[in-house]
Image (cartoon, rainbow, N blue to C red; front, top):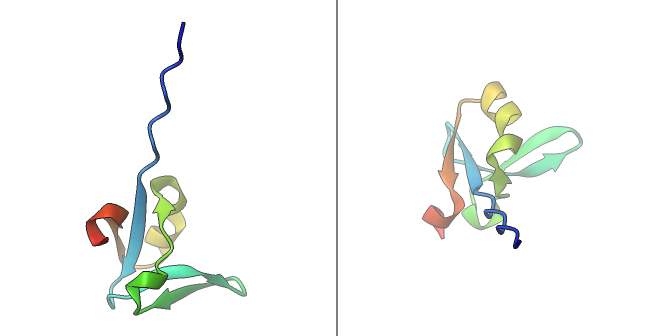
Length: 65
């Protein structure tokens, strides 16, 4: 019996209320950047803390490429 391939995870870019994209963490603080090429794509499960702490929204990675 063949195994079904796992679905590819969906990645999102996190955008804050100022239109800046999440680009990672530095010294325990969120880093935001105006250059969308520096955005760090995350799986939905990895965005919970960002969304709770900041007024942010998610955009699918393929929508901005």
